[in-house]
Length: 207
Image (cartoon, rainbow, N blue to C red; front, side, top):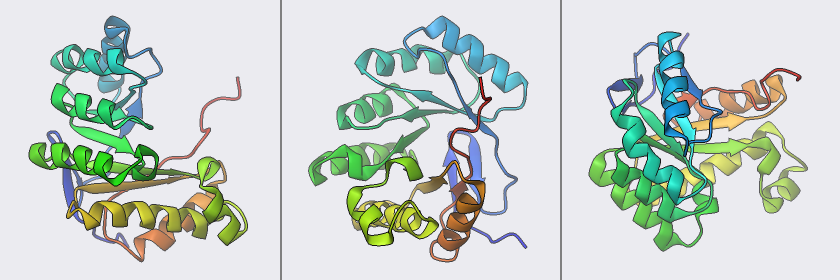
């Protein structure tokens, strides 16, 4: 039986609650190449993709999002890894969602800066936990990248946002081991009611 979660909105798309599962994909183009990125997003949308995520490695990529967003019909999520300034720039460019790991953003004031911008725009944040990049402290505590370790990492990141009274949250727990991923999601879903983003790390072709 499906367990109900909170509902959030990524642009025009409702996620969680009693809504159907939403299909999201990610571009493999250089986001700074707006023409190629727009073309790929349009092809994905025609194939049934409902939300698109793009990598934002630098300010030039963040600046490109304004043009990209104007030329696509589905919500766009910016993937940010370390620089809080890129997250703010993407929000100001009008993205519909952020994918960050608060623990990688740095000092609390940096996370608060991002959260403030996201709250004002009602833009959700996806916390992304990857088994291959768990912190040393958690790996030591749990004896490796176990499902329990992944969940603990996610909970710590969730608490950071909750402490700032931000609840527009979606969570992903990714591992290259399918059963570990399944177990991690089961553990997390018994603890929090945020919508879950389901994906498998290294799920592409062998080539």
